[in-house]
Amino acid sequence: MSPIKIVVIAVLLYLGYRLLVSGWSKKKDDRTEESVPDDGPVADVLIEDPICHKLVPKQQAIRLKSKHNNEILYFCSEECCNLFVRQEVENK
Image 1: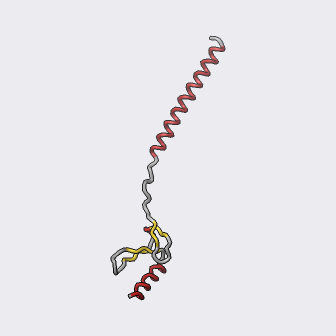
Image 2: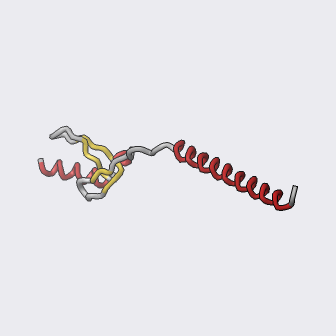
């Protein structure tokens, strides 16, 4: 076999190897992207405090059931909740 044929075969084998490796790595990357779960919708909602108008995550807010219209109100802190209760008592 002549040296030129050996070089050509070696180059062809190298190119074939690179194509196979790059093809497998792309498929592997695609699989990892598909296997990552989608977070979906956000689990928590921001609620506005009726006293200071701050936005608070609903799960972290102070809850108070309103006596006159039976709705649940959400507050950012105990201070805002207490202020609301005092205002309700004064208004009656």
